[in-house]
Image (tube, rainbow, N blue to C red):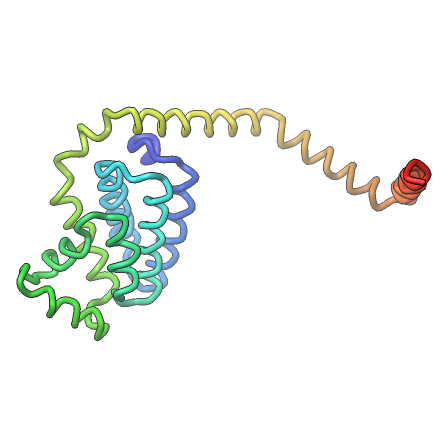
Length: 201
C-alpha cells in the first residue's frame, strides 16, 4: 500500500524495509517507531524525486545506522548526505545543535555519543518538517504514476503466478530433476555429447 501510494517500486521498498526492521529490532527500537521513520524517509525521497537506487541507498544507510547502534560519520556524510540534500543539517538541528554548533555535532558523532534510535528519529522528524507539506504535490507527478504502474504490473505478475503458473512450473521442475538424475537422463546426455563430438570431428 505504501509503495503504491508513493509510486516507489515495491521490490525496492520491501527488501529495504525488511533489512531496516530487522536491524532496528536488534538495536532495541520499537517496530512502530521504525515504521514511522521508514515512512518519513520514503515520503521525503518522493518529494525530492530520488531514483529507486537513491532511495535504496538511503534506506540501506538507515539499516547500517541501526545495526551499528550509533550514528557514524560514514553513513551520515557519505550515504545519507550524498542522497538526501541537507540531511546532515536536518539531523543536527533536530538533535538541538544550532547552525553554528555543527563542529560540536561532528565531534559528538565521531565520539559515538549519538545513539542509533536518537539519530534515526531526528532524521525522520527533520525530513517530515522540511518536506512534509510538499508531499501532496509530489504524489501528482509522472514519476509517481510510473512507479504506481510498475507496482500494478508486479501485482498482476503475482496474479498470474498464483493462478497456476507456479504450480505448473514446480511440477515441470520436479519432472526435469527426476529425468536428469535418472539413467535415461544420463544416457540422453551421453548420446548428445557423442553426437556433438561427431559433428565437430
